[in-house]
Length: 450
Length: 119
Image (cartoon, rainbow over all chains, first blue to last red):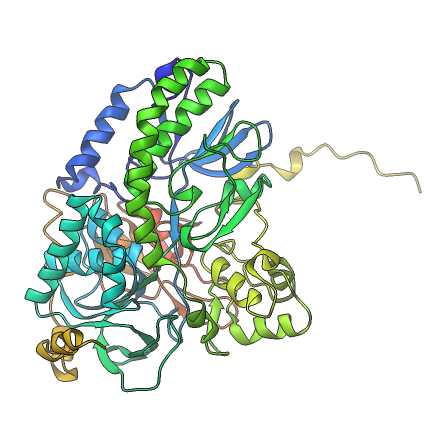
């Protein structure tokens, strides 16, 4: 919207049927249900803007010079652009444990989608586990929707939630909501176990049996009595990582920032990547939350408009100054939340050898360790040797964990690196990639004389 | 563990195994959100499933108590929905002959859906 307001022709490609991302995700219109008012307001603003919107468009490739390929319900389509602003957001990270691949074990972000957009309780009796603000959001969301909770298992201690209080208090409305959530859980009598984590989940005839236990500040399991639960669904999440499919594919520079969710594209103050014309805004540039994402996106749009000559430098400076101040305030709160979501290395180190790390290809920790012992120092070597990260998810789910495991052998996260970006970002039917061909219509050269 | 945490944990009551079993029996997972959607019917693994227009195949199957959507290719282990946003590809099903993530696929009347296990 910021770039379009400067007279540029702007096209928005969105995988979802409606704008809003994960935070303002709306239920399908056929439900007749009310969406979040802020989401409604933002969608109305977008509709009133000159931006051309393309929903249900799954971008599966971006090539240099900027050709963008997308899959829409009736086939593939491609667009060319002088500049691309990537706003791919975040994806959830789950530290593997035995049983995390069982049906009924769901990500925290997934649970919010079920509640917000599908009008569905994740379970009849749900265990909520992991770390970060999503933990409370999901737990309270389940209670509000009429569900029951077995317990909340929080990797962080209570003190950690208060450690960044000044940053949290910088957003009074959000801070108040956090406190209200805690009170609601307390009133509902939901037990909260701080500094605990799931040890194992096993499938039994009557449901999922969950064993939990205490952990230390680094996430390493401690000896001592845990708890056992019988539930039908476990929702678990260990924070968010930046979605960097596009920037990794285009070989833009990246840097490792643990508190921003791992590997993130290297950006200058105007959200430019190392490649001219390629910008990143929002959680895809490093986890900072929805409020910061909206402001950063606006700044990136203005920067693109200036770089393309639609806005003079003087006019640009005048516009961005107040936005920059608001953006850095918003980022302060986001940073406090991101800190709670950061990966705890000792938790990764404690993953058992027989535990599956790569869900797509069923690759275990033991197999990864064997590859590292054989001399792999970098995640792409591990990928080639074990197929870890080679499946249909493209390493989005396991990438950060594999990086931490490979880096745990003396080489750092920088040497361990990240999975090279590959197309297609999402699996797509071959029939939609190439037009259907009748074999009889192929013009074959005449056979060579004998 | 601080004194406060001990107090909190003591005061709260963990749900016992027997009580869990009775809670797992109760009814629908659908919340009040669906107000006016019409019913559609589709099949999964040759079973007839009723759903509401606008729901994804993943949500409709989950609400119908179907969790296992396919077997993993190497270990043959059961898999179902995980990320619900089209990233993990765990909920792949074959819908009218095309492999699609169930969480990004809206139900259509008469749709024929099969598990996404690769033979």
